[in-house]
Length: 335
Image (cartoon, rainbow, N blue to C red; front, side, top):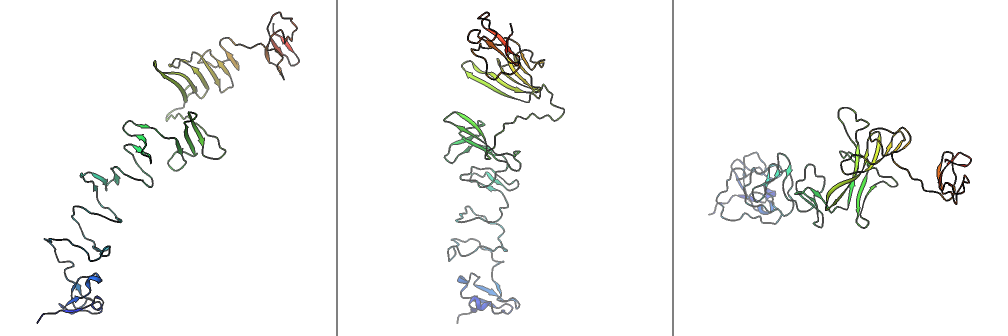
């Protein structure tokens, strides 16, 4: 005669408290997702599963496969396995939770450093969110066009750059820089409707003041040809003046135009000294002869009469032409 244990469904097991040492077999353990055998301790309702904490499965020469797809669990949210030693893991849906440790690639290289939270790997696809830290390497667009060349430290193939205001950006305005390839122009625009853009040069000095003669910013023009690269033009600004010059590349300001904050204007002359008059010309000034009196003259105007069709002093062509000064009433010859 076969030895039979107390048996019943899992629901029936949950309604009894087996006696100490009593064995209970669950007939529907596969569908109930429980152990097939329980042992009573005289106090626990339903008894305790046999082998749940004491069995050590070794030498299994086969696969461990659940009876249903995507239904059974390995451990629970509160009862986890300590370690799993496997060669490969294939996850169909989602890996959720916290990764407490490094992640290595097939070559044994650490691609995720748990201590620093850094990722060192080639990422294929989109990165959603912010990248905080350094990007080492090249950056490519959606069409695989290289935008940032990490090896040569160059940026190319970018048609527009948007600089938005925000925390830690140092910007309080929204600007757009774009390249118009049709007109060969680089345009700077303001991202706000009916607002003008600004281009600001800032020279900072931690200790002491920036002097009136100290250059704050420069715009340089350079030509590159068979003779090499040569700077030939610039606009230079100090707190006291603005200088425009065409030079030989050494910024000697031999020929220049200067505007001073006092309202004075100088053409050539001393590069170091501010002129005595509102207009200072170190050289020859040319005024083209006029064939008729300037319209709407005001006191102090100077013009050159051609002495023929316009002869305010009635000189009859002698001399021809001559300078004339407007005294508030009439044009008077200055010769």
